[in-house]
Length: 220
Image (tube, rainbow, N blue to C red; front, top):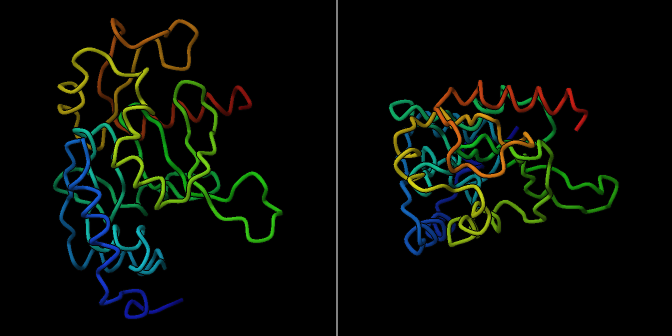
């Protein structure tokens, strides 16, 4: 295991790249401050250097709150805002890979090896657990490319069909440890769109548990 000193670089250029992407974003983004001790412990456990976007984000922020809380990109956590750190979230995740972000509808972005597991030199990519299909989609992007895309405009295209009139106010009212549950659920045949559906905030752990349990039952 590498020491903390080996993981932390004096070169802050990678963090500057993240800050630049945030500043250019068309979305309202809140960059949560990091608690130094908590951030150091998270980074050491993660064993990823700050010369990477993932390492820099974990070490220098509690997380990113994108588009009023629709997307929560995990960092070293911010208990006062009820945002868990990347390790706390992954302790409850029992599939392959590492959860790096969650969205308000119970979607999860996981950084893991691609489908071609046996390929020499195959790089990990971001996979999305979709709450409407309960299946996994390989987005074919590495962590840096995925996060840059989501910060700079891709989120609108990605979530276009799931947004309803007034969604901003509902999402803003949700604490960061909750998500929005719909009745009927997104994965049901009856749920064609979210406008006019019953919606309420529930604990994110509960929302994810329901979706993953259903996926297991359906053999997805």
